[in-house]
Image 1: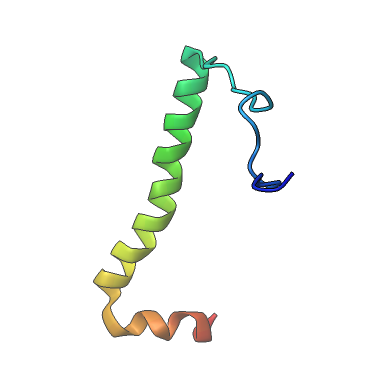
Image 2: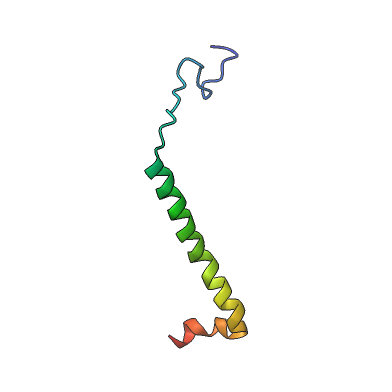
Length: 61
């Protein structure tokens, strides 16, 4: 056991995942990426248009 790294897995124990994405899977991932990027982009655009008043909005609601 001297000289072996107990944390590093041996080559015999490493399991690989199969590359098994279909058309629907790729479509679902890309659609989710488009929608979630909009959730981050649109508030930034609104803040740029509103200017300094954007910090007062949470206080007024």
